[in-house]
Amino acid sequence: MKHIVDRLVTAALLCIASLAALPTTAGAATFRVDDSGTRISAPLVPMRWRTLVPGRGSDNTAEGQAQVALRLNVLPWLNQRGRIYMTLAPAPSGDTIRATWRTQGRLLPGSVQSGGRTVIYEGALPSPTIEETIELTITADGRGLTSPQSLQFSFEIETP
Amino acid sequence: MTRLDLLFCRLTLAGMLAAAGIHSHAFVATIGAGTRTLYLQVGAGTVTGGTFSAGGTPGNNSTINSVSVNVPSAALGAGTQAMTTDSTVSASPYDNFAFCTVPAQVYVGGFYRTPGAAGNGTLSVTSPATLSNGLGDTLPFTSISWVSGGAGDATATIPSGTFTGATQTLYSVTRNNWFESCLAFNYANTALVPAGTFTGRVTYTLAAP
Image (tube, rainbow over all chains, first blue to last red):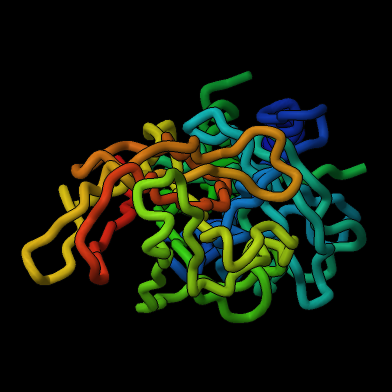
């Protein structure tokens, strides 16, 4: 019996080692965070010119707002410390898109540009989930917004 | 590693992957296309909430301004007579800049707002063939011309010209830019005409593709 237990423990350790070496995007201790419980308030975020009238110097920024109810599953890192990033994939159009968000205090406010990532949480993870509703503002050069496009947000965690 | 170990590893790994959220998906925000807006002001206009540059909002204004000139009998056929307008717009509605001189000039400005690489807008004016005094006498609209200008503009945005008695293109409006000029009208006064008040209406149009 002890022999079987030893082998199981060994196998489990091997599996943990395999998992640690698995999917990382920015180093061995970076993992995708399950955000499948996240909901966005509007299926289509209307983009409006920031200034209705173009200036002689032209401010062509268009912006749209949405509320996002974030739900991040951090159970695998429970009671650890971690740094969570919000990432924004490159826009399908190739244009530069910027997302800025305000929080209610549990998460960090900030902004991210398409193709980049920004820290949204840093510290201990005492709960299996992090939930917070953020106010998301998306801005882009309105001259490039010729058709709807889907922006992909995701989350990554780095642990020490 | 034995077969038992491999199976265990597979099961454990699957469970840990699920717990670790390796199969998580990104949340998606779909943004819409930008909107199109068109604004043209000839003479009087309406903006609420401050100047346009301060975030004001353009509105409809049904005012039809006029330009006119009284030609003394002694001056009939004696050459160009400058016309004046009842428009009181001297400041640019964009930023309140002192741009036109009244009553000598009529303010004309606007913009064409659009996303993408659409073509430019087109500013045109349509004039009838003649002005009429209501008694069967007429003057050709080609006898009226304008000189374009505006304080600080080395080159006028809308070119100077003469009415053709038909629809004519005045200016190709670059999208997502404000344009404006001040037009000073003149009556050629090259012929003797019957007495009376001769009137005619021209219509300015800003069209977008």
